[in-house]
Image (cartoon, rainbow, N blue to C red):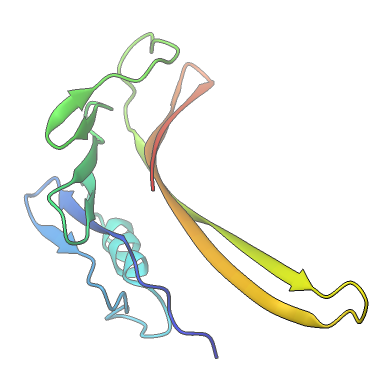
Length: 149
């Protein structure tokens, strides 16, 4: 079984009632240990808790990337960031959270041409994290995301 990857960014959720949920480096669900802590956060939302802020904290640094799901604004190290996008005609009733990470794995092999023998194998992994929101206004869908690596 492969080792669980080391997470470079951990999330923190602040709910509308002021309570928070913090992902740990272990990333193990309290509700279902076979799942990640994101599952616990989503279960809290299903039980009626509304997410106000979703933030990513870079492990070992002070870097923070956040999205305010009340206004749709993004923040990088607490500074507001305006992304170029289509202007919303009005504020929607709700911004829905987008959060995922994408993993690229590369493998390079050095092969001896005459024998076909593998001389060396190198592997590398790159992970990008995406946060953002989607909403619908008058039947039209709007999406905005920010990526960090």
